Image 1 (cartoon, rainbow, N blue to C red):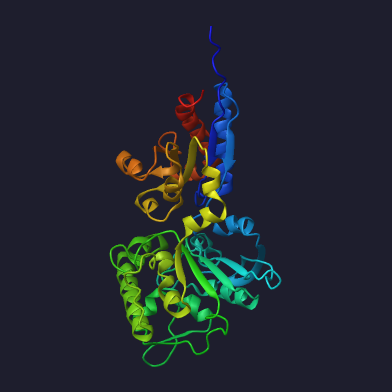
Image 2 (cartoon, rainbow, N blue to C red; image 1 turned 90 degrees about the vertical axis):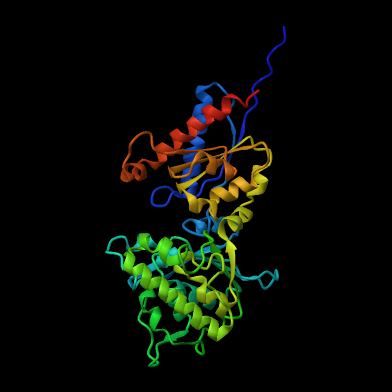
Length: 398
């Protein structure tokens, strides 16, 4: 009589993004781990070989992911939020690299200053919200000696085309009378000229990279105002004003620099923040999810994986652009099932499979209000991960 071969532990990689407003990526990965381990124990399977690789896409959580991966020091500084209120923000900077010859690397998460959650306690004003505070953090990095600055820009409350940020660095955005523009994207239509004569002395000598989580253009139906403006409090009329203002900004910038930002993929991220940084600081737009995945060694972690769980707050059409879920699906080895768990799933089965995923599951265990999903995200993620293990684990052991 042949003795059955012992069950082989599954190698499971847990690589979620944060579920914004409820679960940081590291906590989401821990909840997934608890779920798959509990399910394996109930099924009397060997304890899985679980690898936790929390990720980010250039938005919320990117700073935390890179503090460890790049061994940079967390520091704080005073800046202003999108409504102009003082707050303390974090940033990261590596040790001086003179002896090693390595550049001093700075990491700035824009949402530490202009993040939407920071102004959730007041009525949103999409026309006046400013990215000035992001520039204040950038000034601190320049003063601290950064040679390279990675600007992670997701999760913003602003649609000002980066004018606030560059103003904090010393640029002046002037109307036809030579007066400075009022803060926010609502004033962009009055822009006549841009004066960079007083720009920070180091601003144009460092390497700038902008980590984005979307590939939207600056203007139009897929632009910063039309797609993201409403979630920042923009009414339909506000969207028209903001879109026209960003288009006007692009024309003024092109006249001054020769660089057109209207059709650049990713220029619409964070309310068009790259629109002035690329032409004036020679900034490079990079996919945030790929950058973080490379920094934390995702490809190495995926080697030999049987199952990969990823996820985010909302799995929708935007997820198919520069988000974490798509990056994980692309990086996973052939024959490895990649499953997404999200607060809500707004893709069809065909869209899920076309994106390289085996399946996608919602956290909801029935009809649930958004508050219920947010408050119970940890236990719900654990339960969903256990369900996934039950489906995929049973047929892959042995």
